[in-house]
Amino acid sequence: MRDVFGFENQSKLYNTFRPEYPKPLVDYVILSVTSTHPPGLCVDACKGALDSCVVDVACGTGLFTRQIAPYFDKVVGLDQSAAQLQLAIECPDLYENISYLNYDAYDLTGALDKLEIKSSDVTLVTIAQGFHWLDFDKFVSMLTENLPSNTIFAPIGYSRPHVMNKEFLLDESLKECLCNPDIVLSEYDEKFTTYEKMINSLFEFLLPYFDFNRRVLEKFYQDLPFEDYFESREFKMFPEILETDWYRFQQFIFSISAYRICLEKNEDEIAAGTFDDPLVKLLRFVLETEGKLDLTNSSDFTSAEDAEVLKTIKFDILWNFFVHILSN
Ligand SMILES: C[S@@+](CC[C@H](N)C(=O)[O-])C[C@H]1O[C@@H](n2cnc3c(N)ncnc32)[C@H](O)[C@@H]1O
Image (cartoon, rainbow, N blue to C red; front, side, top):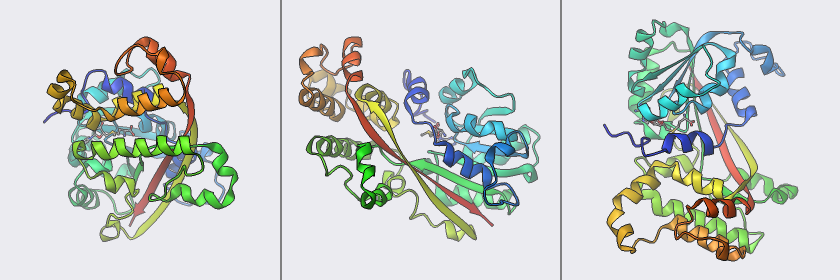
């Protein structure tokens, strides 16, 4: 099977330019497995104290795996991409309690057998920004049939980034808009509204190149029939607004498989100069609007000099992180 995360330099870009999961989200997931769950329990008290195993499915370069590793006795990271795992293994802050395996998500029990871990020791299965890649029924039925009924399943994700402005949050009435997947977020400022609309168009353009139904992710998995398999379901959003720049945004798009597949499929049109790359279009618009287009020297803004120009144009970005905590 083709490794769609194995494009040149992709895993490195992935590891550097994908967002880190917010600490409150990580804490929330960790506290979900503490049996007593007393209100106000300090997550730091759990560090190294959870005498159980967590399996991080579709772990990629280990972004989420490393964030939960300090709390558990054993951590297993599974991914079908050898390129992504290679980066996870090379990561300098590799925790000794993590075992990374190049395994298919559906063969989770095979991976546990290989590591001689009893399924009854697994208290938590996480999957960060990866659940939409899987067949819902096939994966969830595998989990519920093979793991203890009290094992927590925590699918985590984030929708596409939105152009934002921290000042937006000063208006209390607008705060709840953050977690509404259908809202246009930047209508307070023409420039940012246009940037936001262009990012939306970029993702719409890429829709056919995604190997999964992107709308499921944009709706924070809320439409998935988890209740068919789990009795208890909690859902929580962790919106985070961060300062970024257009170079970081460009590199983030380069880490997306659908964008790389799109470039590959349109190779001939690109060579013929007939492909209208939506990322290049967006960056050209931004550079023109900010009066910096004259400072660039490559047609697709990928030269080292252009990177420096893009880095100077800062903006705020909203990441809508979410998690479902599911159990029986
Ligand atoms: C968007 S990445 C998420 C990586 C990581 N969890 C993170 O949060 O950054 C999705 C990952 O799912 C993996 N993946 C997709 N289908 C898979 C499958 N059937 N079994 C194992 N891994 C899979 C891909 O190789 C990729 O590394």
